[in-house]
Image 1 (tube, one colour):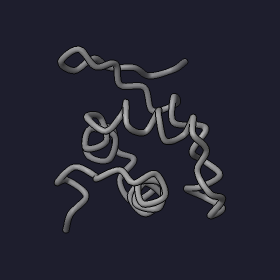
Image 2 (cartoon, helix red, strand yellow):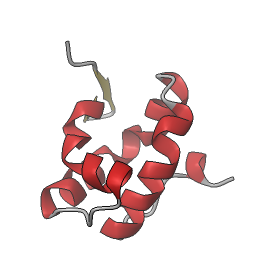
Image 3 (cartoon, one colour):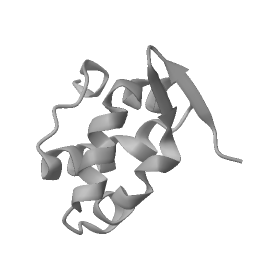
Image 4 (cartoon, one colour):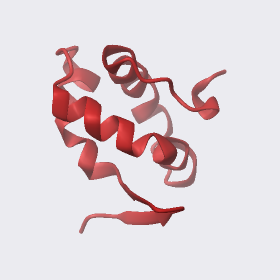
Length: 79
């Protein structure tokens, strides 16, 4: 079952970021699909790490993917 949530006109679906797994886990450069999906899911990232309990599992990988895609992470990632 895929877990999806809706924010203001945004569908949050962590599994849509699966094209980014190679970058997050194995330091493979991100693909165009990965970067597009990351940009679509930026409004959901805080919820994934805080509200859904994925926390540190996503935090370092998300930073790596965001850097590779030139995406600015939301304030929840700035510590």
